[in-house]
Amino acid sequence: MKNLSFLLVWLLPSGGAWACAWCRPRVQAGIHNAAYSANLALVLLPVAVLLALGVGLFYWDRLRPRFAPGRAAA
Image: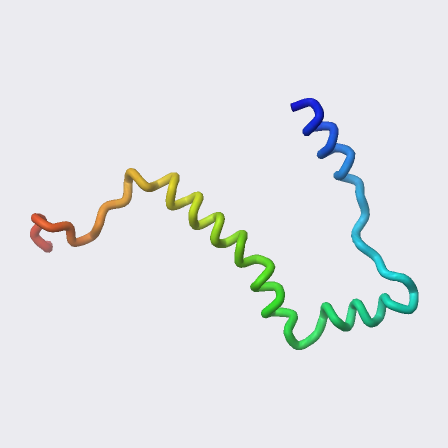
């Protein structure tokens, strides 16, 4: 646990990625293009899936089907 805490504290102040002076405009143009929203959605999709799975597992015992067999519809 102590090693994990040290690793997190050590990685916290790290800077972002950067490119050389010649490549930087091309890298930025490649990131911020017409497909930016699609790329962003693909990057964030695993977060949404994991969040949905976590919430589903957490509330699994409280979930009931709306029209269970043997129950009369109100």
